Length: 244
Ligand SMILES: [Zn+2]
Image 1 (cartoon, rainbow, N blue to C red):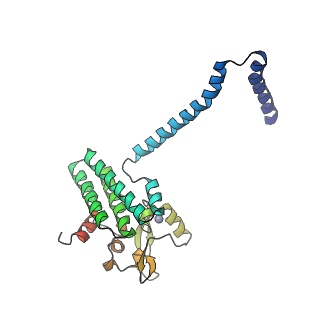
Image 2: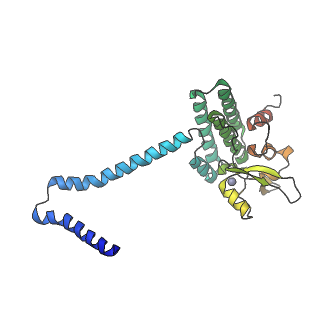
Image 3: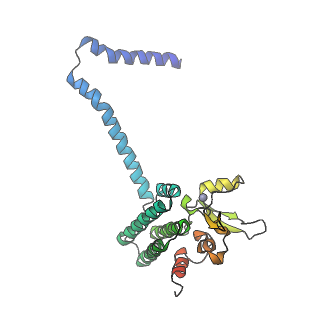
């Protein structure tokens, strides 16, 4: 039934399109219409996509774009540093231009200044991941998030966590609630090792959180996941300036 109807409709469409060309000479206007039609369609689709992406940006005006995390995760250290610098500059711009309460602006400004200081001193990918975590904290402050989730505990360059999940570093170890991205949540549910940020220890890469917390700011804080009463900004400020 559907095929019959469709065949009839196709035949009618074919007739409608072909019959004028058999009776009249093609006019320049018709050629213009045929040429301009696809272009107008492309322009309309382009406008629609731009509008959608603008609406997405307005929904989360300050968050570090997911594409930035994806690019940073693939990049080498120089590339990550470049993107971290761009995000610090973007947060600085938002902090200056926003119309938030002075306390909010001050908190975001502190995260931004700390991220800038850390960026100058960063000696490797784990420190640069810390710059992203501080920018993320500054964005959350400006957004007025009540209980913002940190970046993914297992690898901060995965982007923001989607939820907190229980995690135990070893079978006999203490249990923590850590923020995890969607990919890491799926990996843990399937009892697979998540992709983790590693550091060099005795010539081999180990997960950053396996370094004793007294030896690593990132292991001690989990880039924000392991903090309950203080901000990551405060911890990094103290590490950069122990006199505070
Ligand atoms: Zn993750």
